[in-house]
Length: 370
Ligand SMILES: NC(=O)c1ccc[n+]([C@@H]2O[C@H](COP(=O)([O-])OP(=O)(O)OC[C@H]3O[C@@H](n4cnc5c(N)ncnc54)[C@H](O)[C@@H]3O)[C@@H](O)[C@H]2O)c1
Image 1 (cartoon, rainbow, N blue to C red):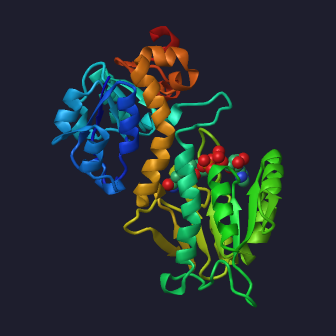
Image 2: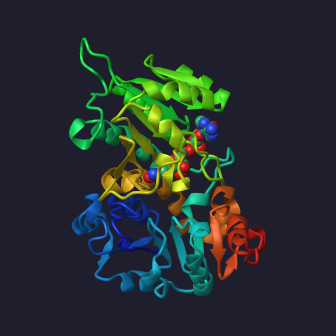
Image 3: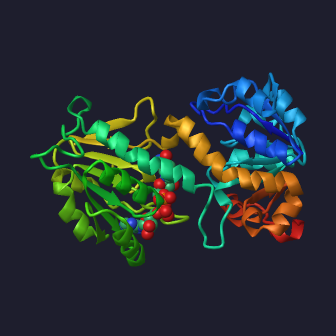
């Protein structure tokens, strides 16, 4: 199959859909790969590295779309790319259709085959192509939190790990899923005193077994949250209720109970946030202050560490990309339920129920097109 890797053109997106290591694997499987010039630059991969791996560099995005049968990228196509997409072209990328109606209509119109990273789903209901970004954001939340706890950045001026003779900072993690577990691990590694809250008792049992001694677990409820926030220095929001807006676990009135310079990092901001006073911010201007409490609410945290994020993402996407290239999308989806669940819009039909429902569009069951 002929595979194309365009350069991401969404604002501040430095990741790339395939690494040179991925190019080698795709070529080993008998495919050819065309990469747009400088596509990998933001992630540390020069054109030369892609050429050495066996890819052909194309100067423009138009040539990449015109040449390829399958496009592998990171973010959803933006308006300027819509007209480059061909009928029957397979697009393997994040789409998040339900959050943007014009994109859905554009993909229906172009009659492309849209396989969305975010809905590829394992039998245990986990989302293997979302997990890597949660791992990055979870780990990064502590790095950012530690930074904003510094006095010049308006934090309390406390070092996460303390020093001999001085107590460490206290970190509260709301939600013990992928983000929360990675956050807790990093905070614990730096020597902080960490508490994870979750509503899932089985998950708390698991975390209690695997976490080091400086991590405690507690059942999440309003009483406990109110009791804990006055003594904590850094609070991480990492809650997810699939398909719903995150619940406001920290309400506006709770800010007055926090110490001045407390830092809140609401990683769940992309799902509406679990801290009432959080609103999405950007890497250019990541924080704002309300009642002397620092709020960090960047909606695309992994974008700041493209070198790590690109590799984390492509480690997870490449095995699926190889199946799609080897078998063609139809056979690959017929053979793999995980991939089949990734199909959202196919040749003008909406085959993912959630997307059809979001915009009141006709729904075509995916099995009827395979
Ligand atoms: N900002 C970013 O850049 C970024 C990046 C990646 C992920 N995210 C977001 O981070 C959030 C968490 O993702 P995840 O992968 O860890 O999800 P996950 O499903 O692995 O974990 C969510 C956890 O929240 C727990 N939970 C639900 N209700 C709760 C409550 N009331 N109190 C405490 N815990 C509760 C669940 O039991 C679960 O363990 C999501 O909204 C995701 O979209 C944001």
